[in-house]
Every structure is written in structure tokens, then in C-alpha cells.
Length: 380
Ligand code: PLP
Figure 1 (cartoon, helix red, strand yellow):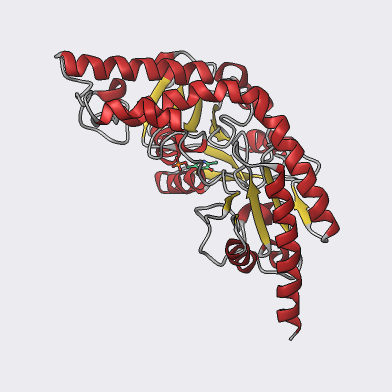
Figure 2 (cartoon, rainbow, N blue to C red):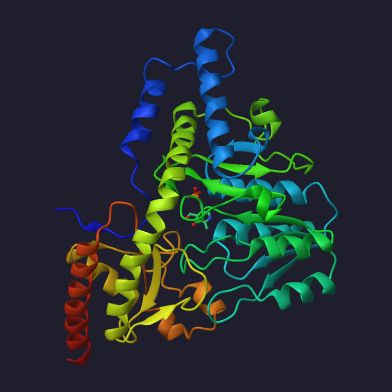
């Protein structure tokens, strides 16, 4: 039997209804959306419809949605593309951003930009005072702060960030990849210039995402060739994936009402169990996605525990999926002031729509057993 899946922040299973919506575009509707004939027109209409579904889900206008290959590309397109169109100045990013934001930001150093990491508190919330200082210290061209963190699930007050940053004349970007489908997300209400989203975190297909972009923002395309996506992203559209993204967004709307309270109930039961086992809960006290719990059992290595839990029938993560495999502790936890030793013990559980309370009970039992076993082994 497959392990219970508790790793929805890494990726989500494809919703069967999304798959059904996609299948005709692998089969009979295989036209190129740029073609003028009927095959092409059918594909183009499907892309346009999906663009509306995506825009609708995130409170944007369809013309603001630029389809790209995923969250990583959207973050790269915005950071590199916006920077290319203005004079080098400062880029300020939170200290807990995903590597697909921090790496392109660091790469701007070569183009004369100054990179400023914005501090977070011990619960992982952005220090608004540090943002104020950063904006005051140096002329800032771009600020990027994620809406919800992939490891801790901590939600940032991006609207407040946007207000401050705009006041200082900076462009504002938010990576909303983890927030989409888990909490209301409104491009208009957040008042940012650009926002990143991705389909595979919301029961859609992998390899498709979007940069939602204020049309007044001039950015340089990073992939050039054809005039696809209004010249911002060349390459024949991945029509089945775009259709799947649209369908996933349409389905996410209904789920937003029912799902978070159900997940929260499960997470609260889990938190209660974790506390009795002496776990340290990261991000505790901060506003957090209902599905996410990042924790550590002091003295038990996170990677080892993840492998033990996998054998016991539970698929969890030892940090962000992209970071897994490395031995370095999570930069997010270090930014929150967590000791390296404890950060190495971190394990992330991220729940999803198909999880049930009985799985949480099973998980807590299994965890207790594994902790006892591993502690005994350490003692020998
Ligand atoms: N941003 C965040 C916060 C993420 O969690 C991820 C994926 O884990 C990404 C960006 C990258 O998205 P994608 O996998 O679609 O490239």
C-alpha cells in the first residue's frame, strides 16, 4: 500500500476532473493555438478560457495573466525581467523566500544591484521595521515578499508590504505559489505589481504557472522567439497544461470554503499530539496556512525521521522539497533564529483535500513509535 500523502506543499495529486478537462487537448484538440484553422482556433479558445479561469481565481484581469512553465520561471521572469528595464538599485527580498526568488535576486549583483535580505521574527513573520529601514537606507527598485511560506506555512501581510514599498517608489512582487488554493488570493487587494502562481500546488498539472502582471510594468522577456503571451514568453503554448491550470483554479474556488476549516481541525489534533511528544512547532503563533505544520523532535535528525515515517506509511518532508537531499539546515529556520542543531531535526507535514482525521491518528501513533525506536538507537 502507498504511504499516506502528507506532502502537499511539495506537490498535489492531479484532480481527476482536471485530468478529464485536459485529455481532449492531448487527443483530438491538438492544434497549435497560433494556427488560424479550426484546430488552432479551438486551442486558442481553450487558452483564453483558462486565462479567464485563472484570472478569476486571483482577482486579476485575464490580460494580466502570463502563462509560463511554473512558479520558478515566473519568479525568474519577474526579477530578471524587471531589473533589466531599470537602473541598478536595491532589491529587497524576505529572508525566507523560495530559492527561485533568492537565486535570481543574487544574480542581479553581477548587474550592479545591491541585494538586501529582510529580517523575519522568530515565528517567521516579516519584520516590518526592517522593511522600513531597508527602504530608507537605499533607493529600492524591487521588493519581493512571499504570501505564504512553503516550509512553515506562515502568511505575510503583503498588502502592508506593498503599501510601504510603493510609498518608496519600489515595484512589489509576491510569490503566491503556496497561498493559491489554500487561502483567498487577490492580486487587486494585495496591490502588488506582480504575483507568481503555479498549478501543481492546487491539484493541477506540473510544468505550468503564471506571472500575474500589472500591464504598466515593463519587463524584459527572458525567453525570446515568437510573440506568444504578448511577447513576454515565447514558445508554443502547452495547451493541455494551461487548460488543466484553468480547471484547477475553477475547482479551487469551491474548495476554499470547505477545506481550510477541515484541515485546521486535523492540524490542531496533530499539534496537540506533537506537543505531548516534546516537539518544537515552528511558526507557532503566526498566521499560518491551515494545512502546514513544520516541527522538530529535538535530538532526532529530520532526514532520518522522514525515512522512518516513509517506511511506516507516511510521506512527509524534511524541509522544502527543493532543499531536500542537502545536509544544510533550512535557511528559513536559520533566518527565524533557530539553532542549526534543531533546524536539522525539522520535518514538514502538509495536508491536502484527501487526508482524513484517522490518518492523523495513525501518524501520531507511528511517530511516537519511531521516536522511541530512534532514541533507543541513539542511546546504544
Ligand atoms: N515558490 C514557492 C513558494 C514554492 O513553494 C515553489 C515550489 O515548491 C515554487 C515557487 C516553484 O514553483 P514550481 O515548482 O512551479 O516551479
